[in-house]
Image 1 (cartoon, rainbow, N blue to C red):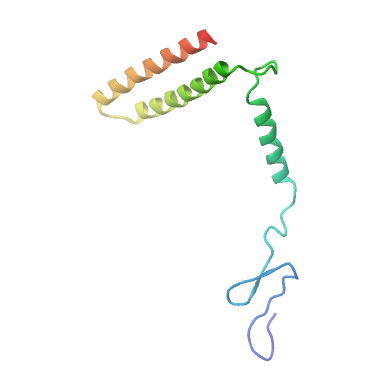
Image 2: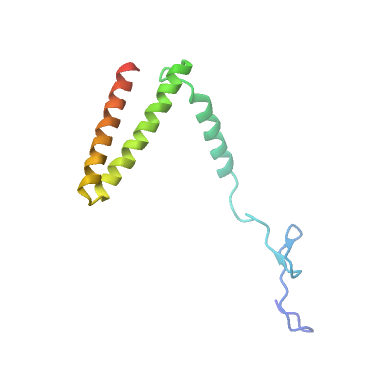
Length: 116
């Protein structure tokens, strides 16, 4: 709404609004957003942290089992990266090197799964 005396626009956003550097008020952050999405995210994170150190049956894992699980996750990520590089590579020598690396990673994953 425009003020008739000054010809400048003024805005009203309520008492919870913050003033900007120019003295104008901005709407409160997330005023119209529904509440609850943050609490659901936090709830999921708490649940993940509680089940992270447990096996499929809910029994706590030993430090060795946790290390094996972490190592497997690292190997799976490495395999995915190498596979992506292999698909995008055009140089035959580099492709050969990546193929050897992929075979080595897959052998490590197989050995790890046998020991788990």
